[in-house]
Image (cartoon, rainbow, N blue to C red; front, top):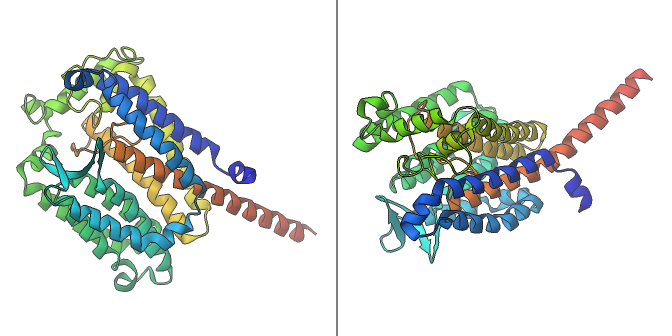
Length: 384
């Protein structure tokens, strides 16, 4: 067991732990006023997120010590349960409707979002299928197409909630796995074009979705309505400067910036901790990205390799899209910031996925050591 932990990527593990602590601190700061207004408790959101984080500790440890090939064997069951949960959440009196979206199960005081679970399940599923299809991954009909039917079903159920943001994240993660699997670029470009067209059509069919997409182009053109959130985000970011106003000293979370503790928590971080706080946060994310890619590159097993790439790029793309939305570079889609934004289901699933990545780092270390030993032995033979 001691040898097991020695081979883990401790830099990756430390970055994940620090991100969780960073998020907990910022949720207290960003959600204190709203917590008092709604529940007469400044620490309301902090306490709930802290509870989820406590639950996440054994989940994280379990993910680190569980053999990753177990997920390969359990994939059919995981996919079936994911589809069932996405169906049940759409049923009145079973699924809980919040802000016009039926995306949650309410289990006592705990809310569970099946779409968040589906995000990780689809990464496992795509990694498993494309790992097994390596001999004919260049064939579209036999290699690339089969798992797309399951993806389309999952996306359809999520869009019915509706939750286009999570559906988009699942598509991006699965697309990253497809690219890393070695599929032909013409097949990837074809599927990418179809996905882009589908997103465009989906956005045009609902006025509120189209308003979200177009408002980021000129938020000041309608600063009191569709552009309000982004304009307030700009002001909060601009007020931060180099070192920020100070922790818990931000102004825009005091009723000016909607979703300050969830989607737009990055704007609060910028206002209170400044550029230094943002750079520190992105340094931690950068460690996860670089070390995650390193794990994927080092692994020889196709399933482990694709699983590592899928988890890494899912977390990284979510960071990019959230940061892009807050800064006006991409449309606002409701994507939260991993490890940082308030949300129990999202935090728990992200922690579990990160634990799998840390577990895979052990196998990557073993693979690198074996490769280095082989190269050393070969070099000695050549020299002699």
